Each structure stands twice: as C-alpha cells, then as structure tokens.
Image (cartoon, rainbow, N blue to C red; front, side, top):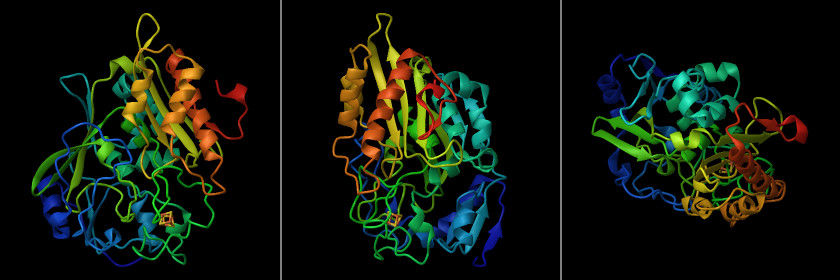
Amino acid sequence: MNPFAYSRPTDIDAALTQIAANGAGDTALPSTAGPTPVPDLAPAVNAATPAAANQYEVRFVAGGTNLLDLLKEGVMVAPKLVDINRLPLDRIEETPDGGLLLGALARNADTAYHPLVKERYPLLADAILAGASPQLRNMASNGGNLLQRTRCYYFYDVATPCNKRTPGAGCSAIGGVTRQHAILGTSEHCIATHPSDMCVALAALEAVVHVQSARGKRQIPFAEFHRLPGDRPDIDTTLAPDELITHIALPPAPQFAGHSAYLKLRERLSYAFALASVAAALDIAEDGTIRAARIAVGGVAHKPWRIPQVEAMLQGQRPSDEVFGRVAEALLSGAVGRGSNNFKIPLARNAIVRALHVASRGTVTNWNVSTETNEGENQ
Ligand code: SF4
C-alpha cells in the first residue's frame, strides 16, 4: 500500500476545499435536466478528462469497503485520503412531497432497516439486504455504494492487462473467462458488470443523486449517474473529480410499494455478485390492469439496465407471463454472450418474467435465491 496523507474534516466546505485539488476542468458534464435517457446513450466524457481516473490526487473515504481493498492491492493510488465520516450527512429524512432524502453517509444496513424505507420503498430495502454481507452493509455508506468500482476479477489482478485499471492496456476478459461479464452495453474496451444491488433498485425508483463541489451543487438523475464503458472504461460515473455525493433523493412512489420484488440470482445464497438481478415494481389499477411499471436489471451491464420505453409496453396490460416475456425480450434486445456467459441471456429473461410475475401478486421481501436453489424454496 502506498503511503498517503490523511485528514478528517468536520464540515462540508473544508472537505470540498481539499478535493478541489483534483480540479474539475472540462470534466463537468452538461446539465442533467430532461428526460431519462435509454441506457445505450453513455454520457460523453470530455477529451480533457485526466488520463487515468485511478490516479486522482485526493480521494474521499467513508466506509472504505471497496476503496481500501483497491489501495491495498495496488489497483488504485490515493496520495491523499480525506475521511468524510464526520460530515453531517448520515441522516434519513422525509421530504415534503412524501419522498425520502438518504444521507450519503448513512450506512447501508441502517438504510435498509429504517422504518420509512421499509414502508415506502420495500424494493430498496430488499435490494440492499441482498448485497454483500452483514459486516459490509454495516460499514458501507450509501454514497460509497454508488461509487464502488464497476469491475471484474481481472481488474483486481495487477498481473493482467485491464483498460479500467490502466487505460490502453487491453482487456483480459475479452477472450478470457467471462462467466460474470456483461451481455449488454459493452464496448471493445471493457465488458465488466456493475456490482451493486442497491443501485438496481435506485434505478427503478428513479432516484436523484445530489452532489456538491466548491463550484456549487447539482442533481444527477440516477440513469445518468453511471456510465457505459465506451472508450473510457476507467471512468465509471459522471461525478466530476472534485464533487462529493451529499444525498440520494427518492421521489414519492406509493403506487409501487404494494407490488414490487427484487430477485437476485447468484452462485450462492450470500456474499456473491448477481449473475442477474431484477428490480420490478408495478402500479396496478383496481381493474387489474397495469398503470405503470419500473424494471431495472443488474449483473448484465456496466450500469443498472433500464429502458423506460420498454416499461411503457406494460401500460394498460393485464399481468401475464406472456406479456412479461415480450417485455423481457425487448429489455434484452441486442444482448450478446461471450462464451461462458451465454447462459446469462436466458437467465436474465427468466428472472425478469419471474420478478414481474411475483410483483404482480404483491410485494415480496427477502426473496433472493442462488442458482442452485429449487423452485419451491423461493416463494
Ligand atoms: Fe478490465 Fe473491464 Fe476488461 Fe475486466 S472487463 S479486464 S474491468 S477492461
């Protein structure tokens, strides 16, 4: 582990002053107002972006559950660490419109078990509890969950080429072992998958990420926060190098609270990344037809995969596996396997149908299964 300077500010302005050394330059992305884009439109990264996002001078650290691993393994360097755990950003608060504002420093476990999160956003609570392990969820912050690196096992192995670790080095996964890798939104430079469960639910709930820098504040719609790899797989998000996540806003969504499900399929029951996961939420009218739907898929792309235009196919439909199957096919349109991850295409399709089927019957919590679990054990 490289030596690093360490500080622990107690107010936000002091923290932002320290991270300002990274400079935003031309990396600040355009206004995030406007409709939610489809996920194949990766936000452009300006050519003036620093050569290697892994080499920023200053980094914030909160729970440290991903960053410290990467520093110890020599995958990333951080000459200066700014510990933000003393900043006043750990609250979960109601907003006047009936939504919630999640502090960036609230821990994942505290968020999942918060009474208002469980009541209003059971989809989010369940997704968080499907991730990592109890110890990690106790340490990991909400902001850190969004900023954990999109990655694969080669990213951690410094003996192998990886464009995400060293831009221009090549991608060891292409032509290598690809069981965990992406089937959608890949590029010739990177085929890694986003590891978070929480972010899949946040995508479906249309969360908004509040960020702040010495230059001011802005809000980033969740669909625009994470990037597809394109030709800059070393840059995972649209957060500028001098910005701090302060909050994650959840818009009111009472129409979905009664019909939601998070399904995670993985190699074992705990502490494993998703091979495919689905956050499904339905707004069902009194006559049984679907008024609105939200579907986000994890484990299949460099970011949570969501296509609002496909969700619109469900409007006015009666729930049925036939209808859900058509939606799944549309969501996975263009999916391409690379040998050992070919199985993900039918797996994701079936997971989408199943999650929608269960959501149509009511909200199911703590419903996360391994690929080895029998059908009857999952209900
Ligand atoms: Fe690196 Fe991405 Fe290739 Fe994995 S898939 S080796 S993270 S460039």
